Amino acid sequence: DTAVSQTPKYLVTQMGNDKSIKCEQNLGHDTMYWYKQDSKKFLKIMFSYNNKELIINETVPNRFSPKSPDKAHLNLHINSLELGDSAVYFCASSQLDRANYGYTFGSGTRLTVV
Amino acid sequence: GDSVTQMEGPVTLSEEAFLTINCTYTATGYPSLFWYVQYPGEGLQLLLKATKADDKGSNKGFEATYRKETTSFHLEKGSVQVSDSAVYFCALSEKGFQKLVFGTGTRLLVSP
Image (cartoon, rainbow over all chains, first blue to last red; front, side):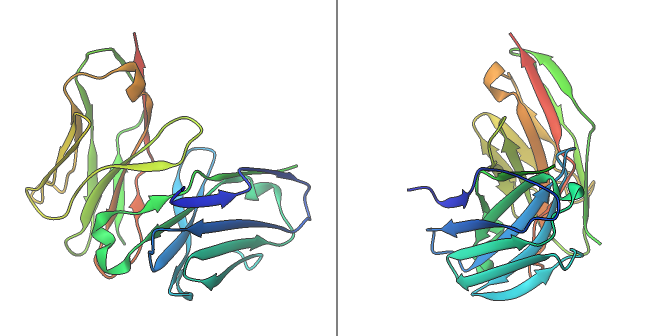
């Protein structure tokens, strides 16, 4: 009964490949996010969706494309993977009108590009 | 834009020592403030929060007070345990901005 679940937990792939990370939340939240954590632990938002609509799109290469089929799911597809994409990617969710309650994070997907 | 500044780590303490991790912020409005904790190999967990000036957030012996006059939200604990070893993130969220802005994180190492 995990609140925010991501798959896979680990992903090792070669440069140039295309890969997807999936995220699902069962909290009934209306907003979902993707954050990237680099090797120095710095966390930066990439995307945010509210009720399946994109509301935040930070400066992220076009190779990254989020997709939200419904408000409980937010997937991240990455084309033509590069070495610099290696990081831990976190999915999170919140209720937009209660954002001051904080976000619930998934356990992360560690992506290693070789 | 909004930003959060945390003290550099690692912070190394002996068990039962007093902990302070400094956090200051820059925001255009009146943000909500948070501390998240990341244990090794895990995701982020909300540790505590405060939504307005002079509010004190507390959880598991940790405390932080929202100080508007000094734009600070320092994390404190009176007696740390080895199990508190983790990375601690200060963060803010402005109403209507729909995202959390994180500090760079501070690693805490507690030895027996």
